[in-house]
Length: 323
Image (cartoon, rainbow, N blue to C red; front, side, top):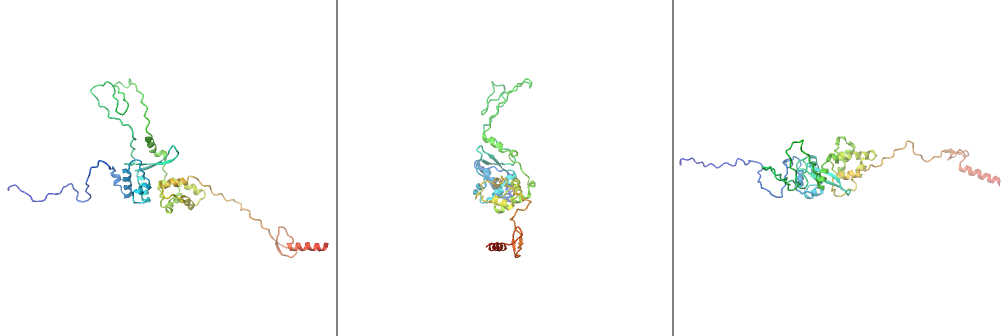
């Protein structure tokens, strides 16, 4: 009875938050995706984060076009295309156009976990662990599991050491070469500033979405198409004629970005409007009005004289006088 005892309830766990979300963690060993906090907690549209999470969860080679994403999400093409543009502007998404050996144009889409990160190397033999230093020199160099044997370095001075010729690098797989070529944006495409573009051409491109809501262009795409629209305007075409040409007979479903279709329709420059001649066009010759010398009747004739009735009367009098 000498020991004090307390009937007060125990305190709650000090580590549990008093408000907000409480995570119930489950260790996943399969079917999970790693997303950076910078992307998952990105401020702005929730559609952008959802599209990014879906693309990250898909395996390589899966279609990520606007039509394919619209089949998965309930949002329309405008919100999906806007989300892809936001990811492209933020550096998570990049598209590169390449020409195949058969002459076809294909678009390769690259998605980065971190903007500006380097692509992972393609599939190939990975070097095994190097053997640690032993107590003494062995009988000879031991080859690595997946590579040719490396010569053992000698401890002689650099002046007396003979430099062995380096082996020729093995040719990289075709997929790795295409990936390296596609990740050279400076050679494939040069960004154009929107401030340097023709404002009239930008206004024509901006009005396209009023005619067809699917023709949504980014600032970079509009700046890239503006020089072609400027050439059409310089050729004498009206802005309404250009918009009619760009929006006529479009397919029901745009499987690619609209900028590619617009660039294809603007690739040829139309004929300029023929200049007007300084001399007025030659019209029909008008015969002047004259008064008849006999009856003073007005008639048209190139030379002054008598009218047709007076001439016919004179010829009749001459015939009667001859009879």
